[in-house]
Image 1 (tube, rainbow over the protein chains, first blue to last red):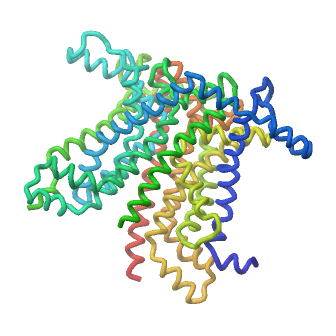
Image 2 (tube, chains in turn red, blue; image 1 turned 30 degrees about the vertical axis):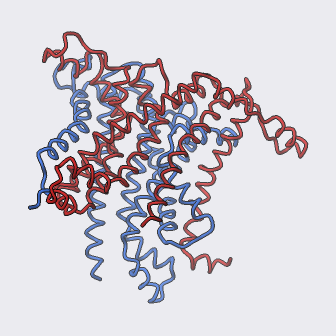
Image 3 (cartoon, rainbow over the protein chains, first blue to last red; image 1 turned 180 degrees about the vertical axis):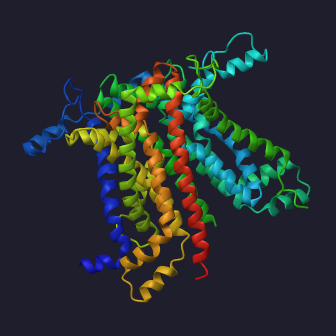
Length: 303
Length: 270
C-alpha cells in the first residue's frame, strides 16, 4: 500500500501505533505468562527453567516442548490453599458486588431524580473520589477503624459499646473498604440507565394502581438491567483479583487469590506457580465476561 | 401528577448519606494531617509539623519525584497513543483485526492489576531489560492509554462529522482536515484524558510494584510499606498533599470539559 493510500484512510493510519503498542505490551506479555506457567521452578535468576531457547536450533525446540509440564496447574488444583483462595475471592467478590448494588442503586436513583442542573453536579461529586488516590482512601479508613480510631471513640462516647470494638483486620473492615472504593463504578452505569428512563412509565404503572414497591420491581428495575449488568461486571471482575484492600484491612488468616499470587511471586519467588495462578484467574474472569456478551447479543437479537 | 420526576424524602436521604460516606473519611484524613499530636487519634491543636517531617524525609521526596516524572511521561505518551486509538475506533472503518484491537483496548480497564503487572514483569525479565523509570512508564502508559481512548472516543462520537467532511470537500487532505478541524474540537477531551492518565499513574501501587527495580520506588510503594507498619501522622500529611494536587488537576480538567461543551454548542449552528 502506497503512502498516499495510507493517508487516505486516516483510521487505519491512526491504528498503527496503538495497535503495535498493545500487541507488544498487553498481548505478548500473556504469552510469557503462559510460557513460564508451563516451566519448572529453579533457584536461579530469573527463578524458572527457560522453556524455549531459539538459538539452539530445532532439536532444542523439540526437547523444550517435551519438557513442558502442567505440574503447576496440577499443584494449584490439588492444593487446598489455592482452592480456598479462589473460592474466597469469588465469595468476597459476589458479596461485595451485592452490597454495592444495594447501596449504589438508591444513590443512583436519587441522582437520576434530581433536577437536570444538579445531576451534573452530583455526577462530578461521585467521580471525584475515583480520581482521589485509591491507597489514600483505604488509609483514611485505617485511621477511622483502628483500635483507638474515630469510630470506636464515637461508639464509646455514645455508650453504645463499653469496650473498643476490633474493626481492623476483620472481614467487615475489608467489605467497608471494597464498597467504599468501588462505589463510583457501580453508581455511574446505574445512573446512566436510570437517567435515560422515561418517568411516564413509572407514572403509568402508579396510575394503574401499582403500589410503589411493585412499580419499582416490575417497571423500574427490569428497565435498569443493562446498567445493573455493566455495574456488576465493572465491580465483580477487579474485586476477584483485589490485592491492596484485603491486604491492608482484612485479617491474614484467609487470603484472596490476588494476595496468594503476590506472595507466591514476591515472597516465595515461585514464578512458575504464580504464573499458573494468574492464568487460572484469567480463565475464571473470562467466563462472566463471555456470558454477559452472549446475553447482550441475545437481547439485541430479540429486538 | 408528576410524582416520579420529583425527589422523595428517600431519594434525598440516600443521596446525602451516599455523599457523606464518600467524603467524610477523606475530610477526616485532611483534618488530622494538621494535628499537632503524635497520636493519630488525639487532637493536639493545629500544626504543620507533619508537613515539615515529610519535606525532611529524603526517601519520601525521592519517591514523590519519581512518581511525578513517571506520571508526566506516561500520561503524555498515553495521551498521544490513546487519542490515535480513539480516532481509529470512532472512525468506524473496518480494518483487519479491529475486534482484537478494541478488545485489547478495553481489557485493561477491568483486568485485575495483579495480572497486568505480573505479565509485564515477565516480559521485561525475558527481554532482559533493566527495571526502573522506563519500565514503570511503559506499564503505566499501557494501562492509562485505554482510559484516554475511552474519554476521547466519547467526545469524538458526539462530534458532528460533517465539519471534517466539509473541510475535505473544500480540498483539505484528510490528515490536514483532522489536524485543523477535529483536533481543536476534541482538545478539551484530550486535556481531560491526560489529567486522568496522570492521576491514575500517580495512584498506582500494584503495577508499579511489579515493574519497578531496586532503588526506584514510587510514592504509593513507599506509602504502602509505611502503612503496613502502622499508622504514622506523616502519611496523613503526604496524603493531603496528593489530594491537593489531584484537586488542582480535577479543577483544570473540569474547566477543560466546560470549555469543550460550550465550544460544542457554538460550533453546532455552523
